[in-house]
Length: 224
Length: 360
Image (cartoon, rainbow over all chains, first blue to last red; front, side, top):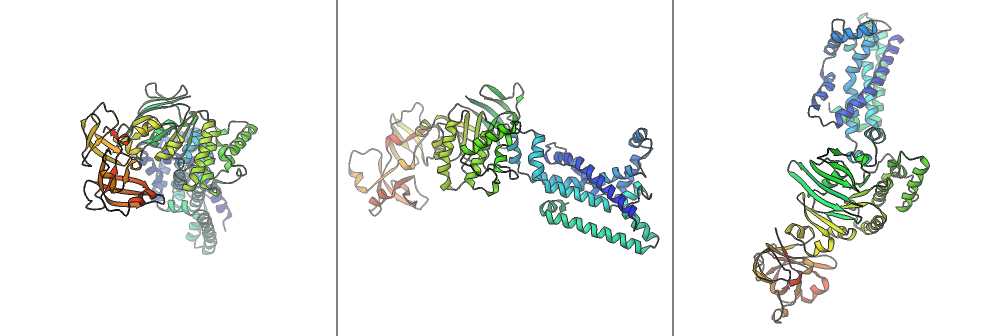
């Protein structure tokens, strides 16, 4: 079994989950509570990775972050190298790819918080930030946990985006799913079998935990 | 000690335009649902921004559309008791009450929470969670939480509507005590006129988003100025009216001529009487000569409560159907038993000093 690939996948998924916790909460807050009339445009953009083929998403990220493009050149001038075919590039791509899996359950959790509790908090002198941490987040923790666990699991299993953006560099961008693909290509079915089984059990475990702890947030998420 | 409110707000299909003031005594905001009571309350608490107007609490401007002032809810120091109490389910009773006291040193905060628990008769419940409390206890926790921040004004949105009837009177007594000791202004929103009458000194009657009447409660109940106010204050019997001479009107819908005690400057458009002021007598009364506003009447329908009966009566001729009646009378069972078995027509008396003359 390729422990290097498994370790890389875990590292990637943990980083993605951490970044999405930091980024997903404010985005979900905004999506839930903003009254901006064009809000649906942002919602649609956040949800895009749900419907877009991973190769399409990967292609745009590859081109966008490459040396010929504006964003890619800025990155290059700051860090001295381009993003595609590095762990950093993989991370950026994975965060974008898993964004809806974090934002939608978190947002559904926020939505489920009784508005009057939020208003009560305000009338008792709490600021919006205090209200968020003392009322909204504790009452929607299940949604936040679901969002983070889902984006973690989703990252472990991604394939198309990784292949487009990261390529297949051992220890740098060769994740578990790519490794399985390689093994099958090399007709190395025993190794592929073992790794696939590990992934299968892992995915089952994650979903069991989510469904078991938190049916409501899941049902909201599954509508998409 | 005063709360002055003069605000306007338009939302699709509804326009709120109210002006009233509360001093130290509780002010009741009375009106049917959809009359704008809750919207007014939310505007005062800062949860909704009016389109125009001014809100001033104890000399401090909370909202002024011309000066562009709109203090956010957290800066208003207004205690709001929500209709469903809005207790934080993830916090214990003690933490709920202490929620607004975060910035105080811990010792001071604990002391204030303990004071509120004692004042609300909630000792021993500090560690409990809201879902384990009865409705009455929840209401007291919500009130204690609102009072803990020592607000300059207290807004109560239908505080008894979520409670069983048998809990109400005890809690209402406790609320009245609490309000007597409260130094700020109180607004009490209700659609229950008896409740508002007991708790408040002055009333503002809202109808369709505007103030239909305001003043001392006795005044409003004795002389409601308009049809709407009479209806909101529980009056059930109305007839269009035409002035005949000073002291006499024709009740067009009831088909009779009435002597009235009330002076009128403008010709009245309606005449009305409360159901509990209508008297019903045995038939013999009709021939006794010197009675005023006494007419033969027939029973159209009736409904009973344990101590009283409501009679739907038609004046002048027998009723064709249960819905064919002019006036509702509420009489005690005992009285009712004195004439229930006697032949109709009975006699209805609409006492001159009980009749209201109303404008539209």
